[in-house]
Image 1 (cartoon, helix red, strand yellow):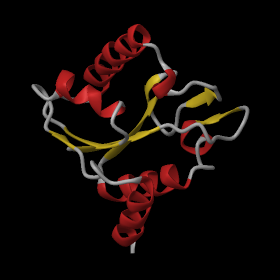
Image 2: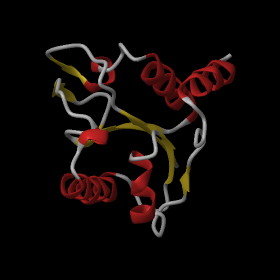
Image 3: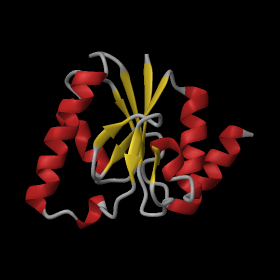
Image 4: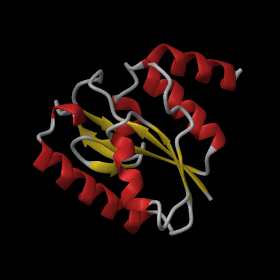
Length: 137
C-alpha cells in the first residue's frame, strides 16, 4: 500500500470545513493533493495543529505554522504525529512525503516500520509546482 503525506499551509479558507478543502487557496497544496489522489492508495495531511488528518476530516481553520513552533512544541508534535501515523497506517505501508523539510523530520521516527520516500526533496517551490504539472499532464 502507498500513502501520500502532504502538508498543510498558511493559505487557507476560513471557518469550519473539510481539511481537503480548507487549504485549497495554496497552489502547492492543490497540486500535491491531486497528484497523491492519483498515485497513492490513501492521502493524509500533516497539520501543524492537528497532526495527521484525512482530507475528509472536518476541521476549524487555524493560524499555526510548523516553522514557528518552539523546539519543545515541535518535538511534541513529532512524537504525537508519529503515534497517529502508527495508529492509522499499517506497518510496512510506503509513506511518500510530499512535504517540506520540517515535516520530513518524522522520517527517522518511522523508517524502521515504514519504507519512506521523499519524491520532491531538494526542489524549490516553483520547481515542485512545475514537477506536479508535468506529472499530472
